[in-house]
Length: 126
Image (cartoon, rainbow, N blue to C red; front, side, top):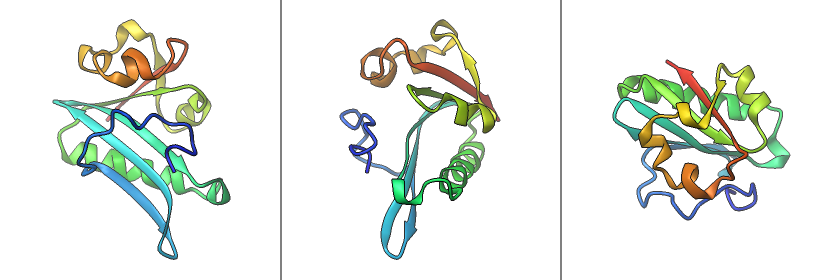
């Protein structure tokens, strides 16, 4: 699913313990993940099967991620996106400059190379 959505997978952790999936009739139709760095998190790999888009699946996955982040002591969630900035604006994220991203986020493979420098960087305070 992530490959089909053109999302980076080469830097995914072996353990996907902070990833959540949405299922429909035993088929995975959505996924979202969170990488944690102390009190900050990096939202990544949000994807929904095209046949199931516009049904609120991404929003439900994002709610699960936010709840999990809060329970884990995360204070701020960051993300990097090439195409979904308007969606994430509606979900409470706001754009920041690349320089405003915390060092832990700047050191991720997503920030430093997998996503182009033209990508949007966004933040959501919990």
